[in-house]
Amino acid sequence: MSEKTAPTFPFTLPFGVDAMRKAMTDAQERWGSLLDDATKLEGQGVTHARTMVDESAKLAHETLNYWTNLHNEWRKVATEATKRSLDLVSPR
Image 1 (tube, rainbow, N blue to C red):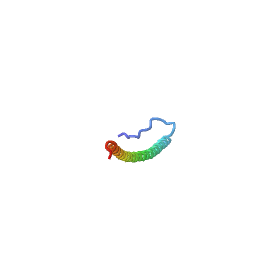
Image 2: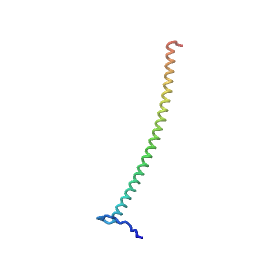
Image 3: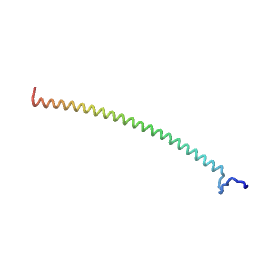
Image 4: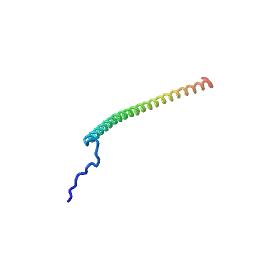
């Protein structure tokens, strides 16, 4: 039987394998750091989105309250105007 040998790198590098390993390790660390920063930014974005949703809900509630109050006041004014009109036509 013939013995199998480990494949050899077919190219010669102007720098050693250790330099390549260090470059790859450094790149991996930078990539990890970038992903950590992206995770922090994502968390901040989610926090801002939740705040916007909460503020939008508050605005919607306030809008409904305002509309209800405005409608009630309009109804009072319309009722009073109707009474005054009737008083003009047939005074008491």
